[in-house]
Image (cartoon, rainbow, N blue to C red; front, side):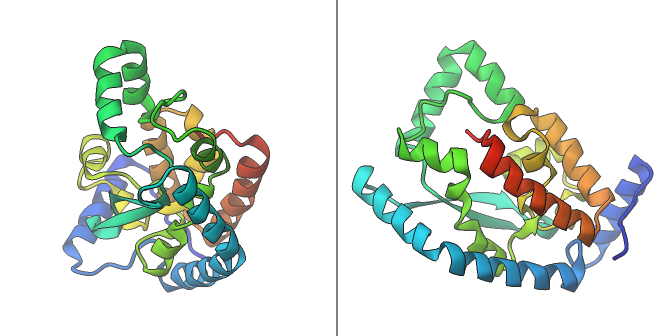
Length: 231
């Protein structure tokens, strides 16, 4: 497969501008990547269907409230979509986050750097921690893949605020469908800063190839099953 390889920031900007002038550009990888995504996601849902039902029942019995959580993210060509997960946070998570950021300077600095908290009091005890540690909370995103909103491998899906503030509306990020996994997932995951994640996403798009996607998928199994550094 051909590689999308840009040698400079000017090349990236020119690529982004060309896509902006195209009314309906195909996301990175075209039809071959899309076909692979459909087959992979379909098999994954068949394989994990029973697990997903068990998780849904456990969440309902233990925590109550909604089983799923959908957060608006920016996808290919700047289109927003609901990114689905099993709910791992308490129902008043936003209020708790606001209080933490206002009262704990150390936690606020960590959140600004990584958009995450290592010791996050918003996470549902036990089951929420387990789901995030094993990345099982992201299983519903295979539905996003089937709907054409995400890819198996791609940039990490970001919110509109993160896109505007850290990528910029003309960044090549929107040339690809966001991925369930990607370079960020296999290169330190939660131990890298958000700025480094932005650089990884650009590097992935610059050097995309189908073989590279397969390598990332294989490395993801090792990261999730062995290292388990999710939180």
